[in-house]
Image (cartoon, rainbow, N blue to C red; front, side, top):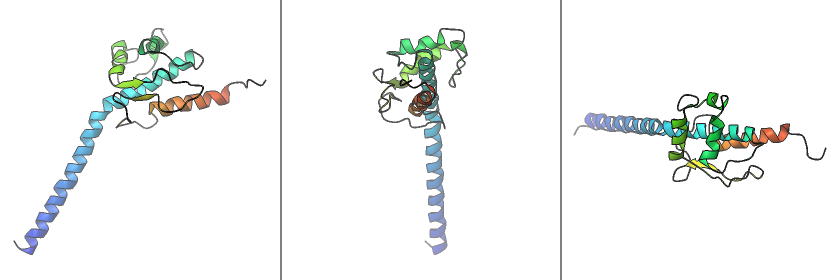
Length: 149
């Protein structure tokens, strides 16, 4: 094989490798989008629940989904479906696990994880549910009147 053909072969292999790596990343991202929306929607529902229940944490999916039972609740935006889509909301439990023993007064750890544990493979910016919960709790801590007064 001539030197020119070797160079062409190496360049072709490199191009195939780069294209394959990009395709893998794109497919991985596309496959993770439904889970990313489920995580975002779970975070949204948890925050709405805490807003309606003086920052108490729900004890089950059924209790969490009660936030959708009112007219206002049916207007809560769900990114993976239409607002108020109860069928979709009930399906979140198949994609997202929630630690129902989480204590908002002592927010340690990540109460929202993918089914099977670990971290979400794809997270939309500003839509990681644990960050959403912590941000809500930190914001509420600064806007609540002090107990000392």
